[in-house]
Length: 200
Image 1 (tube, rainbow, N blue to C red):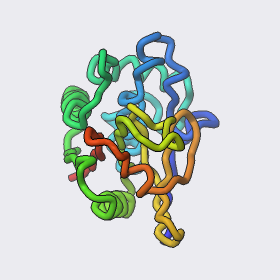
Image 2: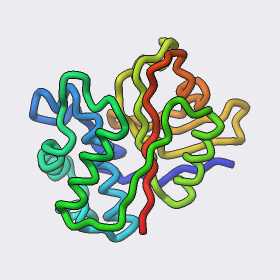
Image 3: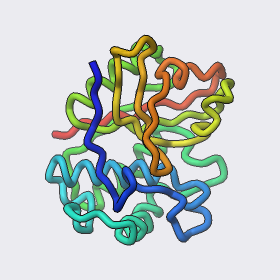
């Protein structure tokens, strides 16, 4: 079965892009903030949680998204090692939602040490609820996945009918279908993981 979320379009881009940011450090290390900002677009547009996105959720523009990223920066700001743990992302984003009065969003981590089958099940369950999945990859031994190294990005689709289960990644204004097992099995001990949302 193939599942794919209707990803919010910001002008002609699926979600935001850290290359747009005017702050130099956010341009270099704002990938966690992009995932949080994109998540807020889903919360506002698909679930009516308009407090999460303080602009016009019905008409998404690049200018508004850049302004929004500046609001998110204090909560998920770049740092020396980046936001290199899921708990750091969850703590910062949870505080943003609390400060905005956007109640009802909880987050849990599926660590990268879990098996690819567990990751597939968690992604599939989230997509069925209409929720994207932020994913963190740290180092990866396969150069085919170098674009995802030390990087937060979104998972917005799953194709279990493919010979090798595929997952859709969204980052830098681009959607790509890649092997879930290949992406997940990094070949190194230190791993990232998934952040799983629940809306009450």
